[in-house]
Length: 413
Image (cartoon, rainbow, N blue to C red):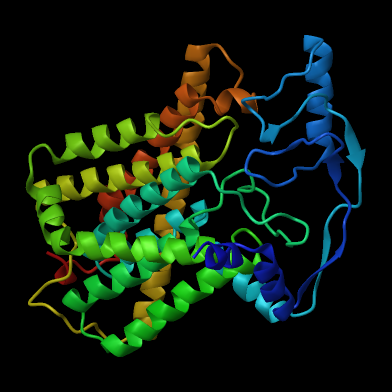
């Protein structure tokens, strides 16, 4: 059993897949330590900025600390850095490169404020609500498991790594694989109840999209085969266990008088109680974003139910979708662009204001990156920003569509 696990976790499997897809490591040029400085997630970290930071800290303190809580490093004693060639790679198949790099964007912030709201604006708010609920649960469990298990990502070299932002995160499970599985199959199962379409075709699309995202994590060198398999299995188990209760949760979310309180208090509590690490990682901030989007959307849907205008599809279900004409496509594109502009403006405005208020309260500079990473600043500013986005998406955007003539109220309830 352990032999199988070790084999699936081997970086050589990732390297083999990358080579098959035309991504080849060419030359190595990096800054590596002479005495054992490594990322807390197990991989080497390079870059002159880090060297300068370490030297400045050593001069200021007169000593070398074994570990810096704001870095991604663990060092044995002194910060002696030796220069080596940095990893370079050659792309021999650009079709695979663009396919997998594009697929890997699922799970990034740009996905949070485009695809999920687009389901709300152009298909059915019910489906968006269901997706957000399952997505938030799956992602929270996956992110927490990463920081509890603390298993490293594949080392580079020999693996070619195409992403750097999340390199300080741990590897198992792959939350991209979890999100792709959860979103694809939640949409398939939920849409089958609401809309008429060939289920077999939907199943093929769900499998293909999930597989592309999973393979993209191998192609970009961010996860091992074991990470991806565990992500898919964990997501499938969560969905199987929770599926019988989706309808109950949806009813309580819309009709319970304490729904808005639970929607805010529980995600905020989970964000503050997120597992502490011995180094800074993007997992807490990303998890806060996900929980906040869910909280804001949940409150918005509850408010819409009270106001009697939910913009849901009209039953009896499943309904037949209207034909996709050029006029319908144009309206869909217009709704997407208008809605996206509103969400981006909301993000920039609330983020700008909340950061300045919090930084003034704690007496730090807004431009201080390390200060913004402190829990007492990072959690509330990201939570307030993305709760606002959830509220605007679920309450205001559709009403703006009506005002602009981009929505037919005859298609909603």
